[in-house]
Length: 266
Image: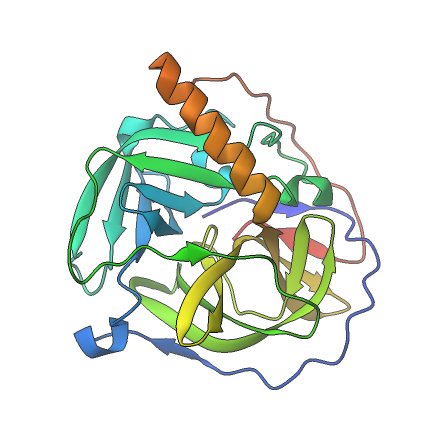
């Protein structure tokens, strides 16, 4: 979960919301078939986020999930756990985290900025790969266009014990590095994969960075993946080469900026 942060959300000319599908809880093995690579990321005693395997040992999530919401300090990799396919008290696989790397340009701070959404991407390198027949890592793909259908699988504060699928939501707008989405997100959904389905195959095109309100309409903000993911992969490779976990110092800024829109970290 993240703090509620105030920021001025720049004027967005949102089109009328198309018909969205409801959230559906994935409570059974049949429900979750094909979505087993989505899991809950436990952040010690600091809450949880959502993540998805994009390789047998790599989990894609949001960069802000790696920071303590109270102090702004990086959460130690050893305190993070990935629960693949977490459902009703059990996971398909339990894994610790060897390294957790945020985008090099992401800066965690108490006053948020739309500029940081474009860098809100992180990778978790697991201490052991997840090699199970039922768990297939997702491919990634280019960001969708305005008006395209997407979907989301996520956990959240009121649905922490099983993932929920919203099969159809839409891209309402996009800016450099950022998508504005009609997907239903809440605290705990940070890092959740946004999918497009092509020829029956779900591919990740974004991760949830924040939820927002624009003129009273709830929206989700997602980070486009192509260039940010490449940068994080390079940073992870460099860190692995150094054999270090990275403990960069950060400075937490308090307060907020009044405005006509709300912007919060799910």
